Image (cartoon, rainbow, N blue to C red; front, side, top):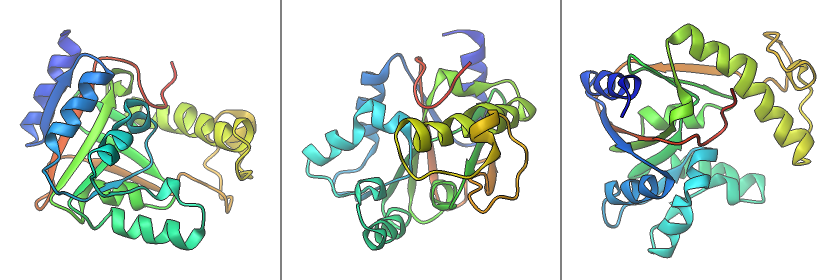
Length: 214
């Protein structure tokens, strides 16, 4: 484990956030599965990292009830799943950036993911690839605005053929702090410490996972 990783883990723990280090995606999956109590209902926030680890399928194969809004085909079912996912036993998602001094930085279009991390259930689990660790808040916001968000919207709307987002960053690749109705960067959050009523666990995987480009 390098000094940067040790510093990040120590910083999280100093903020009363339980931090775990694993070497690879498979170990990450097994660690997450071990943290979820038997019989718990699990809600998901949109996360490429969670999908890459295969956690959702593993939970479903174990018979765990999983509220996954992103498997729903109708708006009504998706809205219900979003509600249930943020008011259950365990919330599972990723993060946009983790600073070396232990702060979790996120942006959300709707707000369900960022609110789900801190409220509505006794346990939150956040999975983080080593590529999401950044030096400080300035670096975190720069990555989110000019790397993560533009690529996320472009991939979903152009490469995957999803709903077209009429936002400048899809074309320019850079944040213009737009006022478009399709703007996806609506809610920014910085988690400075453990929420009073939620145990926050962070699992850091020593691999590049999730949406994160150099």
